[in-house]
Image (cartoon, rainbow, N blue to C red):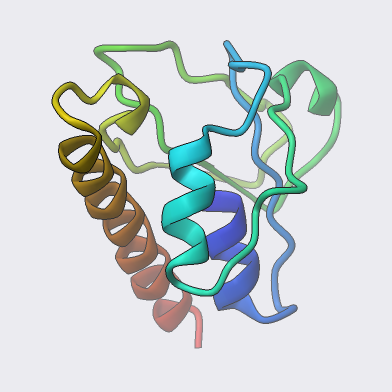
Length: 122
């Protein structure tokens, strides 16, 4: 969700790539659903390992992992690193609707954090 949101909100000023230390191997169907609700189609995205980006240099690396549930990857070549911990909605419990509520909340939290960052860069 973060990659789709960042690329949409940045409108070409930034290019975001998403990867994880333990990728699921698929984009979660609920993530696709809640992103469609805000007009962003991530259905063609794929789950990537941070290993794919090893050795590359980035202006900014933002880790969004919840430390209680996973290990955040590191990128020693990054010019700047920020950590924005968000709950992993894939682990949400409850009914289908209750799980969607968590996905929507996390989507909105990520969107708000990205918007604040982008506004601080202008």
